[in-house]
View (spheres, rainbow, N blue to C red):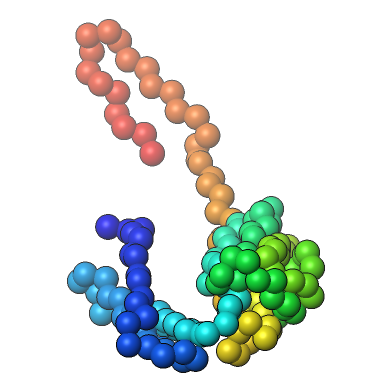
Length: 178
């Protein structure tokens, strides 16, 4: 059944810093031919690194409705003590400039950034963007994918807008109406 959470763990046994290990999780729903690959990166360092969580963000909004609430992107050090400088920026690959950041986009971790989406004027569909963080505490700039799913604003029309059934007690049930 869906949705379902899967826990993934890594271990440093046999890995000498500095090293970046990459791999992927391959997921297939039972009875489906659709395969989803999830990239996994594991950075091992001898000095503190910048942690960024979550590693991806997904927002959903109805077309013509209210934009979703901002979400936090947390930045901290792997040793929970060191202050690590960073810069952050937001870009989109579709739909215009619907993705923005608020908070200090040039600063020092630990901190958080507010990731904001504006769905106004967007047609139903999926829009992609990313938040990119650059820091000496990262082996390379880190891109956090951001997806905005604008759903159709469905309305229901009921005709007729009222039904009336009449019957005599003890009689036969009235005919169905559509």
